[in-house]
Length: 209
Image 1 (tube, one colour):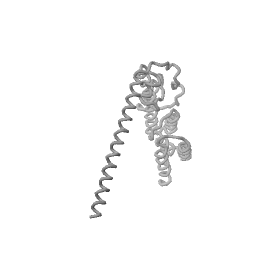
Image 2: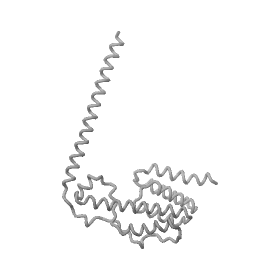
Image 3: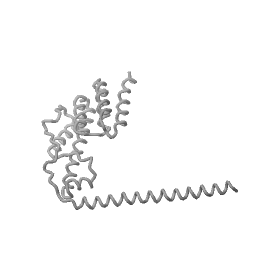
Image 4: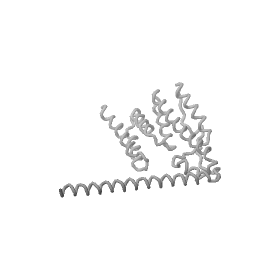
């Protein structure tokens, strides 16, 4: 009998705790939602601000690594890249849409999104070009374009692993080691994942011998 009463009391305490936690969670979710919509409303009323002094990325055609290839895919990507660098570009990945409108005004939102899209398109084209060069055996050129992508802010896993694969093709495993050290000393958001992938690629060379 005593055990039954104790169990019943514990059960009631558990139910009360679950109810409290559920209500607490609901209140937190409502506050987050209310804060978001309040911030979004403020953002949508933010006046247009001057964006003429934004640090736009300037890449000239002459700055791009030179290549010599007759491969149609490589040539198409290279021509595409020459066109992209003519457009205004800026990396706005650290901003949410709401923060972007708050910082520069809702009237600039569309323009800034286009600048950010241009930047992402630029990095993706560099990556695609580097991969195409690797496929046709132009490893030195491929490495240059992967390095170019990372230099300008690419955080894509495939750009790091692609560069590591090219370094192996060039018999330069020490470059992978340097890349790993650079990542370990930095603050890349996916540092652990990328470092692990690079170490796996480097170790695969030893296993092939």
